[in-house]
Length: 418
Image 1 (cartoon, rainbow, N blue to C red):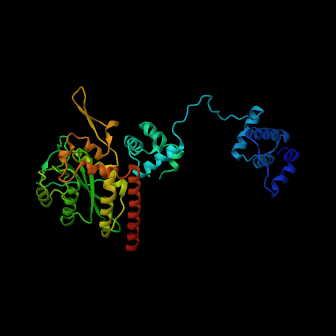
Image 2: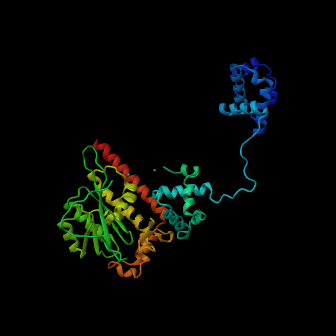
Image 3: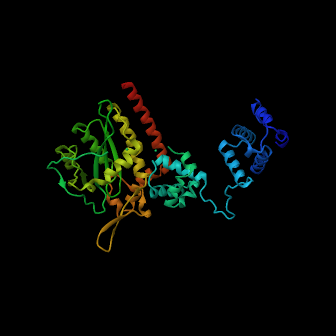
């Protein structure tokens, strides 16, 4: 570089050099030599005494030879004017830097888990990472298995994580003299269900389908079903199928004040299934049905959004829910379970501890005398085999693939209808 450029002594020679069609075929060895070249060039052409056009000419010359940006050259010129020299002021790494524990590969792996699970909370993500290493023996999760909740959020801010990632209302009630108006009291026993309906969306004045969301209060076992309309003809058979899908006996049924559930047909169905307790939410007590409402947002909207689904695709939606989404929710998706703590003043507070984050299946198994709650013909061994058939991450990725296929079918149906 020195031999090629030091011979340029006048501004006319520099202008001829810049007007040439040939690109610069040399490069600087390192930043130190580049800074030395900039300083020599400024001194040689007496830069600070030049007029504005000639200063611009010298700057363009430095940019072409060094490859520095216009802003960077301006900063170097300013430094030379103030101090008479050009030095590298970049921060040097500390002599005894902290060793980085989590690599960009770990951040990308966390992004893969969040993409598959829909970015759950920190405690739930921590359990997934632990299970992938300890339960399924995936050595890729060896470091992430011991990560803290706080550092999960730190990794989510890194560039390696963001490179691997992409990222929704409620219903209203009415009064009917059916059901007991009180809060459910499960007393730690499974089989106390909460139910709600989610409307996926309309399109050009055409009503979309509805999802029935049924959640067990104690274990958070969850089953979903789709119906084209919330009339008795469609809703009651689907509701019966969902209630029969739970592995344990059903003892109570709770709904808000929606007329699709608080009616004689549903009450008759509950009597046929020997479900003796039918409760409904109290006015000005939004927490009575809060569990299923939160599942509407964290599960239904997260996985299915607000997309309009034509009625003709209800069987396909039910196949996706039954074959993919519900098994994933019950056997592979960690949930947060509260622990009630009584304060010195007597107030009961709920605490969500890390050791209480687990899947609905594991929560059910941990109940005292869990086998006594099972339906006839259902065993814990059979449930364990369903849970061990695939890993948490593989199950989440399978649900995503199935959902993408479902969305493509929905898009094709919408285009053909349009």
